[in-house]
Image 1 (spheres, one colour):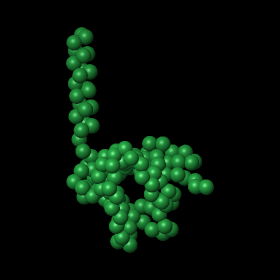
Image 2 (cartoon, one colour):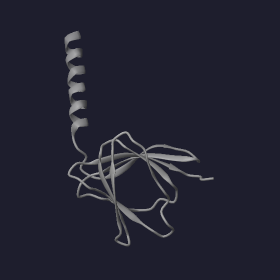
Image 3 (cartoon, one colour):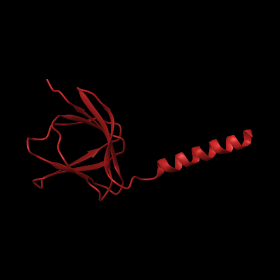
Image 4 (spheres, one colour):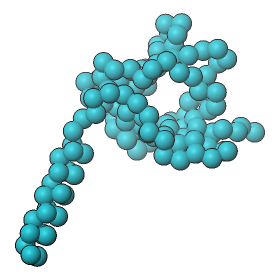
Length: 122
């Protein structure tokens, strides 16, 4: 009985590792934490699948989980390219009023970032 249990545990671990190695198929956000002062989410930006049009009313800190290029394309057509290194922190200001943008992966691999958006600024 113990052997069957051990094999089941090993099979479950192998499935978990295999599923975590699979690249995501679509871009999106997953909320990590939120209160009145701060919002934290993980964004995955898959090549050829930009994050939908949105805006940020508040300044934010971006911490890349993967190194790469993230392009921020404004609704006006202006583009900013950011070369980010995994594990470093970067500052982005609030978006100007009425301005929207999309996030686009600048390489051939998904770009993953943690975003900490300050809900209140002093």
